[in-house]
Amino acid sequence: LLLKFLYNVGNLTGIPNDVIKKLVRRQNDRTMGFFIEQLKGEKWNMIKEFQRGNINEEIMFDEFSKGYVNLWHFSSPPVQKKPGKQPKKGQLNWYTDKLRKIREQIMALHSVYKHVSKINYENVKIAYKAYLNCKRVYNYELKLAKRLAFENYIEKAPSRCKATWEVISSISTKPVDLDVDNLNNYFIDSVHELGSK
Image (cartoon, rainbow, N blue to C red; front, side, top):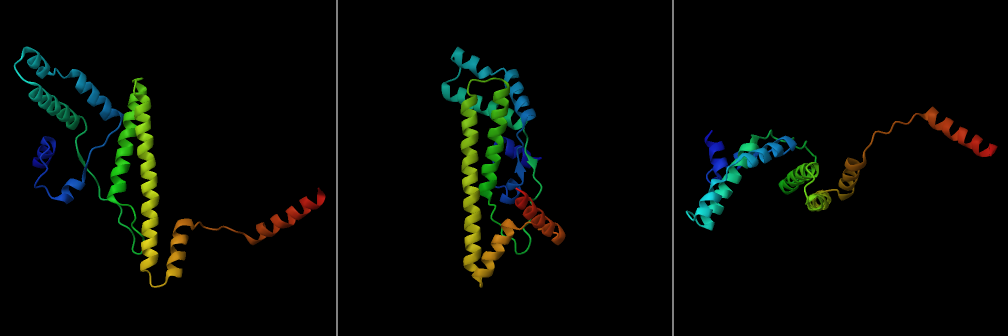
């Protein structure tokens, strides 16, 4: 309970890193819709106080920011993420935290784009471009991370040829289901077809 309170207030100092990494906010159409409904229902009294001259711009902005962030945290509370799959022994672990964060950004931008397109908001193109740009960055970083992991694996291996073939087979290994009779029949039939033309 204390952890959730500190997280909602925004004071994350003093909390161990392994605890913070396990908390995520799930963004989907339901949470975005709930957030928008909460924003519509908020009274925003600080604007009236500013118009009356009781507070200045800084205090109004601080109050607005606190209200906005609190509604956001209320709409999509942090949930504890299950630990991810651990790589098998001998398997390369090239998927980094940076890639994981970019992927979470892609999912959030996609959710924003879907929601904005449903309500016919004027900035649909901007939301879509932001989503595509983030997706391009992710694909580039993904390829780069794979390549660097494979290069490092090959460089550090005692037998570079064997390591190279292990990398190739880990990428392109597909079960080959060949039946000798089917293969022979295919070539015999194709010769007959070519001869009859």
